[in-house]
Length: 635
Image (cartoon, rainbow, N blue to C red; front, side, top):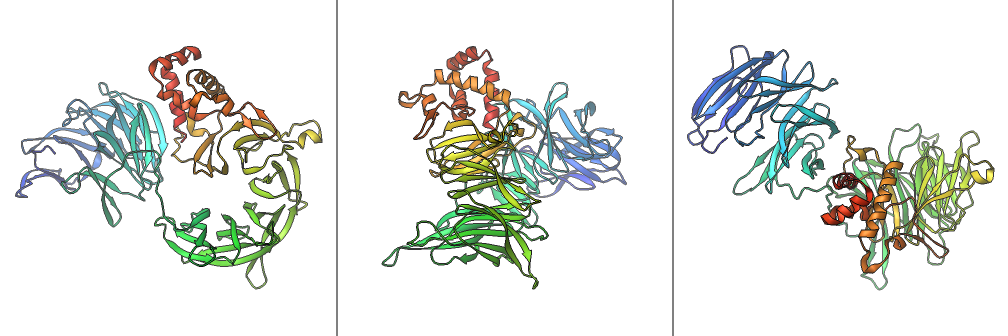
C-alpha cells in the first residue's frame, strides 16, 4: 500500500481496509451473497478479485475508501490474477492479467474498464497457477506459471496488450507462485516451487538462477530496520528471513572435511554422498595415513557413518548402482592394498555397501588380484578395471539369501586399465600408456572382445564417451583429443583402428570428465540441446566441453580466426601455437576444437574492434554478440 494508505486485508467474504495504528476497520467491500472471493491481487491503489462463477471485480482505493469501479462476467472460473504496475506510474496499473480454468488461457484486460484486449490459449491440460506482469531492462513481460512446474514467458506490448515471442521452460515439477522483489535497485522475480528460482535479465535476455533452498511455498519482500532488503520465505512448517546474494549462475559452497577427499559419489535414493577420504596422522614419530569411506547427508553435509579401510588399503573407485533382479541401490567401492615392497598392487577388494537407517552396511566383498581402478554399472552387472584386466561380475543370490559378486568374464591386453566408460554393450578403456581402446560385450558368448583401438602411445589421464562413435581422451602432456569408431571401414584393419579426429592443447592436466552442466539448461534456447561434458583438473580448474552442431562450429571457427588477428596473446605468444596438440612425439595444429574463452572475450572488446571483426565476418555486431552470449549460457 502507499505509505499514507491503511493496510488491506482480503478474506473469503470481503475486502477490508484496516487502520495501521488503531487496528480499527476503516472500510469494507463485501462479496455478493452466495459468492466467496477465490483469488485476489492488489497494488497501492487498485484491487482485482474473482468470486466463484467467473465474476471479476475491480476496486480502487482512494483516501481510505474502497470503491467498486467495474464488474465483468467471464465464461469460466478464474485461476489467478495480477496487475503489477509496469507503466510510468508505479502505483497504478493500466493492465490486468487473468489466468483461466477450462479453456486453459491467459487474458489481458485493460483497466479501469475491464475490457478484454488479448486472449492467449496455452494449449495443454495444465492450468495457469500464477501470472505476473513485470518489466526487466525496459522490456515488459508476462510470466505465466503452470501447475506442473513449467513457466511460460511472453513479450508484452503495454500499449495494445499484445503477447508475442512465447517461450517455455521447466523450473520444477510442482505449481509455481511468482512474486517480484528488488535487490540493489534491480527488479527480480522469485518463482516459489519445489525448485525455487530467481528470474532476472541480462543483456535483454531472461536468465534463471537456482536458489539454494528446498521447496518454497511463498515469498514476499521484507524490509525493516533489523532486516533491510530481505525476503520472507515460507515453506511447510517454517518461515525464513534472508537476503539474496549477488545473483549468479554458479554458487560455490565449501564444506570443510578436515581430510583429503579422493573420490565422491552421490546416491539420490538415500540422499547421501559417499566420500573416499585420507586422513594424515603427523603426531607420531612416523607419518601415517588412514583411509575411510565416509557417508555424508546431502543437505547438511554432516558425517553420518564411517567405514574404515584396512592398513595400507586405498580406495581407488566408487559407484552408486543397482543390479539385475534386485531393487536395492548400493555403493560399490574398489580398493587396492598399496604395500611398500610392491611396485604395483597385487591385491584389492570390491566392497558393496547399502545405506540402512543412515548407516553404511557392508553387504558383500570380493577379493581381487590387483587395484580396482574403475567401477561401472553395466547391464545390471558390475564392470571393474583391475590392473591390466577388465572384469565383469554378476550379482548372485546364495542359497542362504545373502548376495555375492561372481566373476562372469574378462578381457586382458592392457598395461594398466585406469579409466573405463560404458555405453550399451560398448566399453571404452583409457590405458596408462596405450591410449584408448574399444571393447564390446557379447551376450550370447558371455565374453568381452576388443573391437578397435587407437595405436598412438598416449599416457591417459581420463576418458569419456561423447556419443556412439566419438570418444574423448585427456593425456599427461595436458592435451585433449577425440577418436572416432570407424564402423564403415572396408577392411577389418580399418574397422579395428580408432581414428583421431580432434586434437587440442588444454594446458591443464584433466583427470575427470562427467556428462552434465553446472547451470540450468533452458530447452527453449538454441544451446539447450547442446550436450556438454564437465572436466576437472589437478589445478582445481573446472571447465566445460560442448559438442557443437556443424554449422555453429564453422561459424565460431571463423570468428575465432578473426579474433586471433585482433587479440594479441599474453607476452606476444601465438594463440595458435599454444593450442596446438603437443607431446614428445609430435606437434600438430588444433583441429575440431575451439577455444571458448577466446571466443567469449569478443564481448569484452571495445566497439571499434567489434566493428573490425563484424566487417571481416560480414555479420552485424548485434548478431555476433547474440551468438556469443548464447554460448556463455553453457556454463
